[in-house]
Amino acid sequence: MYHLLTWPQLSYVAVNAKNKIVGYVLSKMEEPDGGVPHGHITSLSVLRTYRRLGLATALMYQSQRAMAENFGAAYVSLHVRKTNRAALQLYRDHLGFMYVSAGITGVEKAYYADGEDAFSMRCDLHHFSEDQNLDHVVDHVKSEDERSTSKTENERSKAARLNGDTDGLLLLENMKDLHL
Image 1: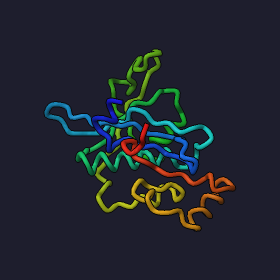
Image 2: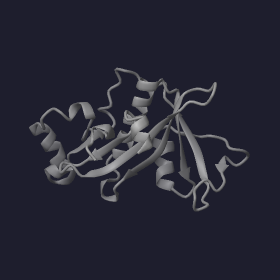
Image 3: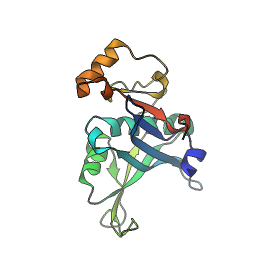
């Protein structure tokens, strides 16, 4: 809840056509004394049945863009379990994150409460600008700004192609706009 109250612009959810939350990104800003302000991804999750649709990418891009535009973040950081190969592939191969060297091995030992090691990663945010359009990320995910417009037949058609019915239409919403 602290993240939502302090940085409400940075956290997003993906909801399906039935308004069920199917994914989220929880983010914050860090401004070390005398350091460069940067964002940090605290948590990213997508329900298993909604994976491989581009939702994690869209959620990450939306949060990163908000970091750059609202707070002037120069980069975004995150930690990922050493054993989470799917997340490592997403961050490294699709989102442009690089490993941050932490000593000789590049691993933060026993980072997680269960004792598992983590990789520290970061991604430069210089490529985000006010006029950047995120349509190329995934065409079946709508941004928060577009949510207020009605669903056109074209959108319903895209949703039908995605999952075989209109339940496939997915939307991104800023968490601050949810009434939880």
